[in-house]
Image (cartoon, rainbow, N blue to C red; front, side, top):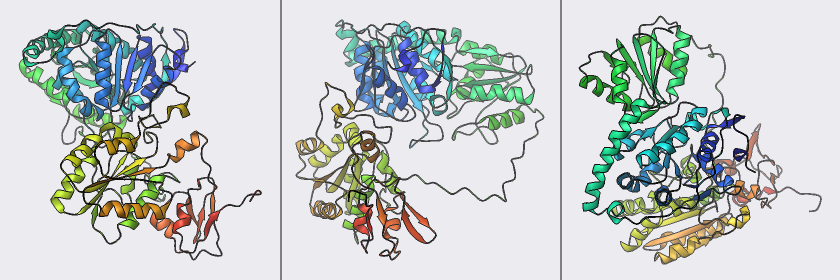
Length: 620
């Protein structure tokens, strides 16, 4: 049985933040969950996926975040406790459904988890999704610790059912990926079968219905504000006339700063865990007891702006600071030292900055730029594209996935990346605006997520570009989650169908479709040349299973390669053109690390001296 389904109430377990959230959800009686994987939320979905084999929980990896929210919303409106999990940019995809779902509401609890990513550890932006709560008119909850995240999830379901509205549960990377001891509660048996009571004048959002639903939403938000003022996740801690208002992991940093600065009894904290709607009465009462206030929040000045507005409404003139020059930045993550430094400056607290250790005589650590894995088929594709387009001025839009790393030298394949699926749409604009050849890249999971619409548009409008679909048979970047093209029987799951990308592409009307095996460089180069010569939309599907995924499935069959030093002329084409991490320099000679080499043979095909060959074994 899955570890998150084990353990008795009162027992303690060391859990990752995402594991704690998953455990909290099943303790709350979660019956239906849907997700599109995305770091830093991926482990929540993975644990749901695994638990669904050992319990009554229904879980699916939906094709994108909009679909996952829609299926979860339908289940919730049949009375099931449901959850939808995504990373912060995924809410952009789901926003169309989100805005109107706030009007429609839910019957069973529906929690929408958004994992925000300050510092962009694995994301293309730092958007602050608290604003989605404000935009949609939905409650927002924010935990400050791993243990609190588990407990707050149960409250989120209760709140959703009390208001009959979805609840946004906002985490950040530091909560998702920290580990802490969590006390287990009782796992509720979920209600797995519900019923849908037809009521078109509550569910069919034509204008006449929606006008009434908007009134209901505003009434619900008024109720939510009252709940926020009385919520146990919003509380005042400590004493003093100087105040700090904090949320999320910033609260932990503030507590450390007060202890380190020795100002206990001088600085008090208003911790907010229910941050939309803001608890106006609680905030106003707090401000009235302070001479000045510092708002500590990562990301945008969401709370700061609301606190200042409440102060103005109350006629209060105290100093309220947060973001600004020599204060907190809207950029990146906070850390304890930063919070301590700003608090000392704002509150005029004596503070001796601890000078960092002098490392001027210590050499810099060697850089480790992000790179594709040894044997990755994407590297073979990028090499083949470079060879096929020699002497040509080609624009290469790319997309979100492992292959995004192809923008780094020496591969240098990736000129424009915006969001998932954009690589089937942006090529049309580049082609029309410049008249140049365009060859774009998209992965299989990303194609299923949001690629067909752009490709359909291109076929209909008769655009002229080549789309390379990198079908590595899994959702690789986020941890090998399944997508509609995955053979689920290889993962010992039954009852799934499998969607063939080639059939989808041909069904969309693409006339020139080619399937290549990227490790065969000569044939791949020829196929790419033919596709680029075609006038109109052409698609190449590069089919090769992700090397790490194949290794996990024990399907790797290639032998490691070695370099015949007698033949090698040290041209270093192998390093300078494909930069596989299995290569290294021993003095001035190029070597291959046999433990990293997967035997893909790409380097052997590009070596001008044919000095790279498989390692011989006793059976050879």
